[in-house]
Amino acid sequence: MTDGVAQSRVPGPVTAARPLRVMISCGEPSGDQYAADLTRALRAQSPGIVVRGMGGPKLREAGAELIADFAGISVTGITEAVRVVPRSLALIKQLTADAEANRPDVFVAVDFPDFNFRLMAALKKLGIPVVYYISPQLWAWRGSRMKTMQALVDRILVIFPFEEQLYANAGVEARFVGHPMVETARPTVGREAFFRELGLNPTWPTFAVLPGSRHNEIRRHVPVLAKALPLIWRELARAQFIIAAAPGLQDADFAPFECGGPGRPVLVHGRADDVIAASDVVITASGTATTQTALHETPMVVVYKLSATTYALAKPFALVDMYAMPNLIAGRRIVPELIQGDFTAERVAEEAVRYFTTPGLRQKVSGDLANVRARLGTPGASSRAAEAVLEVARRSHG
Image (cartoon, rainbow, N blue to C red; front, side, top):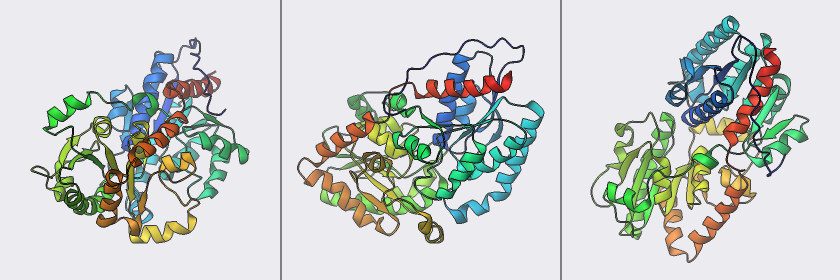
């Protein structure tokens, strides 16, 4: 399947006395949202279905029963991951015991490969089929993980168009269902109303800042970005800044920005789509937010920094020379990436200001991002993913 994603077909009702059971596992805020959307779609297509597993507040709100909460185990980097190993292993043991007692008809892993690979290996030994949704980025690094996917996963559901062919080349069946944010990445209020609410001027250059969703990302990114904003203000005296705080983060996490006052940023919690849609340029950590920004067709500067040890250990295993998803989808560098040593306050300010000092640049990049958006499929990704999950669950169920 390529860009033409098939329309969703709602499967017929289950006649067995016992309702279908799905175990799901996600480990970070973006995965929590995807898992929640999938759960709603599963419940719409199969009323009475029981969804249990590991997740966060959004998965719980969608009607799933949380066996475990992922709080405290979502980190990036090799050295950082070592510190959460004891808790991760305890959670895997807890989830495996629950699966053995309650026998789900299918296990759905949502991204979060370092944890989910171990969990799905344990569940596969119990004879539980595995669906991987939001597959790990095998094309980016540690390509050896393809063998694990081949051995353990019954069905792979991918959200980026180029991933389907990657798996096909390895002899693994994957289904492109489209990106779930195509239908969810939209503002809740108009730009003028949002600016009035924040006390900002809609005619002034506006920058959104999305430093990341994990605490270790915040600790590395915020100090550099806090130094970059005054440099932007120096070049664009009317510049104004909005920081989008990811769920689970507190005001104290953004203290280096010294929010409030002329030229200082406004902090907004849990409204990333409103912030991105209202801004002229987004400065964002590499990750899910780059796709979210692309869906709004907003020009961006992508930044990221790992610990020095993690970067040194991981770099030999990297398979790509670009990291921002819009660039990977486009197959070329359409937005600037400032990674590791290139991520300095001076470089951030330079690239951000360039969008206002280079004639036509913002319009060109917005057009490139519109093409990226078009390749991410049509609305209904969560429903198509739910249909695919239910196909596997029903075979296991009866």
